[in-house]
Image: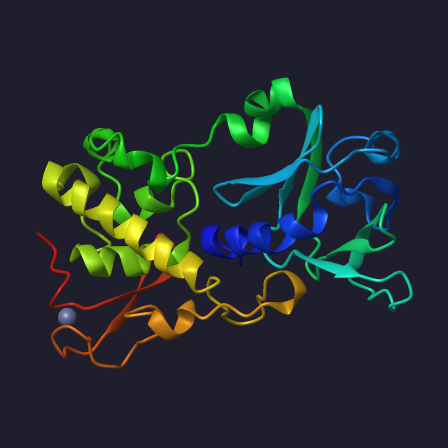
Length: 274
Ligand SMILES: [Zn+2]
């Protein structure tokens, strides 16, 4: 599943290809991808000009002059930038033809992705974005935010970090890496963490995400970003997927447990339950 760094890689890859292009034609082959009435949506997409591409958490925001297309790739969504003569793969569900003659094709094997067109003024009121928490990057200016959220719950810290209403854009891979860096056990009750520990977590989250973005994200299992760009962050993983290997810090064997139903990797020596 693409996480924040992979989505950021998609954003950076697509932006220079799309800015100033105007959508001249749209085809929808699987209407469930589109939020709302897809026929009306297709009409509204024609003549839209890409101004820029933003990202919030795992959402791609295609910004036009007055509207924004909110896109979530979910499990397997990808974009391809192709000529019209290239064969259309059966997993391509939405095709945008651009003013330069190229096509932006949305490919999604699992068909879980979504696209929703909203006006700029209603962007942050839409259901998908309104309930989201903060990006780890925003917390540099708000160091106590995570501490206050943790104080309010006895849930395990891993579940809190995965909770998109608290933090956006930290998925399973990155949460394992962040907790390892911060030396915190994933099952530690959130309200038992000190202010200092939550500050270390924020610092670790920013460091891990920045490094992953710099390396184009993580390519694990089937996920590749746009245009088949491979991420390189999987080579930097310290604990995630490393069950049975030695901890790079202390040499203890890395374990895999389940936390809230999610496969979780940790070093039982570096990350002790307090
Ligand atoms: Zn260790």
